[in-house]
Image (tube, rainbow, N blue to C red):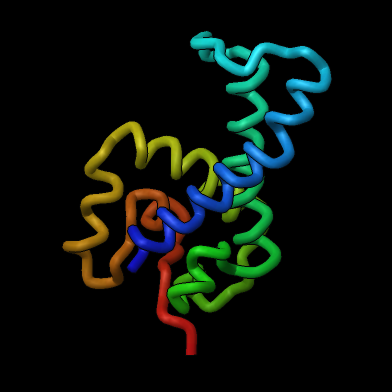
Length: 129
């Protein structure tokens, strides 16, 4: 379910980029198709990507993809998600998990279905009641 929720999130983020970011770049005559890692379009889409996950998780406890599939990010101790927890989980933890691919694969094998980024922050994703 988390995989499908993530795909929905990627569609949402891609739509935001294509409906808002790309037209702004075209209007300002900034090139859209640069391969440089630090190209303005790469930075803008990274901000959209990480901003979406951080803000949605902090304020809603779930992204639109998680909402569709009835999933929610919770702290294992029952605490409210702090900014530090959310920033680390969604920004640094997600980067680490994506770099070390096993970070996502382990979700299927751990009892609490935690990814590497969840293990770092004492969080998990549960089905909403």
